[in-house]
Length: 408
Image (cartoon, rainbow, N blue to C red):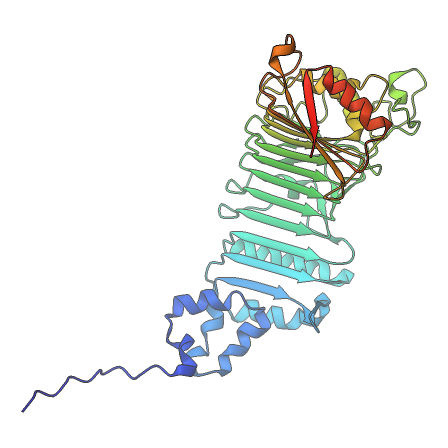
């Protein structure tokens, strides 16, 4: 008689409950990807699920109505009960996203932010769709915070001093009001400032010596003063005419009033303007990759070029038509002569994004004379919509530097 096969003592896993067979630690992580309302509702699935939501590794406090973000008031009581009833386990991520808030909601949302920090959160996101929610003028104190993503909030002086966040590496601010004279962090590696507004008369100083990447796009107010960023790898700076360092008397010929005695009020430096130093270019002079895209009339780059630093590590450079204005294209000449190891130059002239219709590629010819610019310049791209008189002027200028082109 053949021996009877040993039966498996564990009950078979139901086809419909394979998720329920996962270890608790994995389910805690899976639930953290759900909005908190949905995570809590899983308590009715089975006895085992009754308390899993209390140990999630993340919280997504997101007000949703018909697929759109709703107001803070729609989740006030729910979130307050949630924070009381959940276990005091550490949190990897916290997301707080709403479309609207009222004045009485501000201390409540600030409390939620502080709760997240107390739970040793690694990545904290606060997005407010409409209006500017005031964050308390108190420092963040956390050894664990790595990423901070802010949208639609007003930031005060003490909040932007991250001395008590020694692990913070990634700071993103979009559509925020900045009411501080300084952003400082000794650990920050990535800084992004998008569509932010600065109302103070003095320049905000950005002190981030370990920064690796920087983005400043559509900034309104006086241009930030960038302190030394010796470890910087890449920077993208796009300034438009909402920048207060825009010349009010700029004309199409590229003449800035700051170059003569008839200066406008925006071009006159204020008392603490560090007028003997570069505002932007000095701080990013160590970068390997630069995108500098100011709109015409922006004065700050023309001002900085008077003290133009040497870009000792710069490998790739993207410029727009701003640098090709003026009678002798002096801005372009200045930055090229101060970039001794430049390898690739891209000029995006009178076109944005992928809208350019014409592309020309060229390279530096070292056999035609002594080098006035980088001998390493092996690729020059010119992108535009049409080869008009202004573009031809740029091509002629580059040809004088022994750069030869061909159409694509």
